[in-house]
View 1 (cartoon, rainbow, N blue to C red):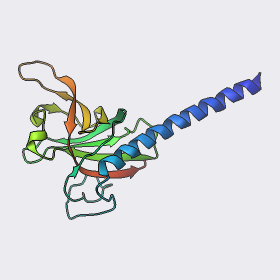
View 2: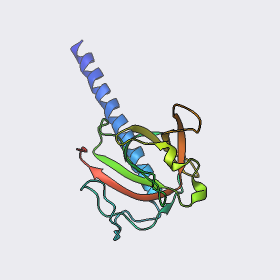
View 3: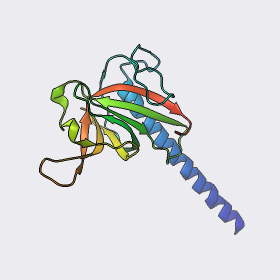
View 4: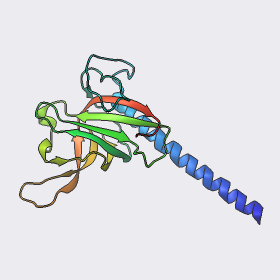
Length: 174
């Protein structure tokens, strides 16, 4: 009987390891798909940092040509709904999920006509959990949005058409 128990434990460990590998692979695939037109290693003089872990941001926004992908858990790192260029910064997966690498993605819109929701009405609090998915036209993020005339916000998928920056992070966030 103890031999059977050890096999179950090993099988459980293999399933947990396989699940973690799929999550990491999916996160890396999304980062690669969103950043495909631009080398991740290039640098620019743009000085937009989140903490001290990140290099300077890279060039101009990218055109997104994503594939249909499953939802990936993320964490809102920052939301800047400025009039000139709103930027949503996500870290995927969140620190509650074990992963040797995390992807930091900064999203926005290529042009004002792409914005489906008033950026001032988006409630993306720093540290709040969210999800990201891609389809053939945009990266979509599950966010709280205030509706005019309603007392409580509703959750909806908000589409972003530009990647402002992407970075791979190692270790656990502080």
